[in-house]
Length: 71
Image (cartoon, rainbow, N blue to C red; front, side, top):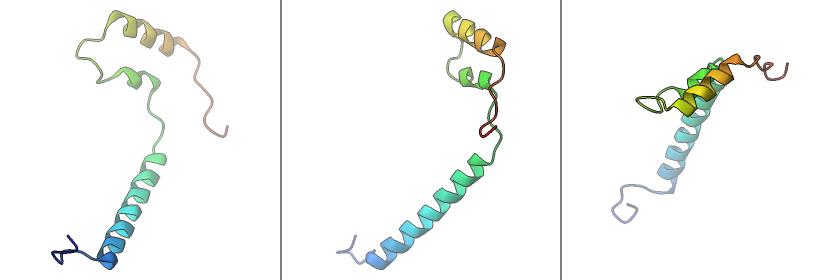
């Protein structure tokens, strides 16, 4: 791409900076979301959940809630 004049070090640095900024913003947005429900761990994995995972999901849902981070 450099040989074709499509990019240079300055353009690469600007793209890298923009991407790093976009990634940091996305990470911050996700970190500010509340934690997902524990049972959602099993969602969207199988069209029909196998019996052994159903048992694990039921067991997980019966456990007490974990304390929040930093709490």
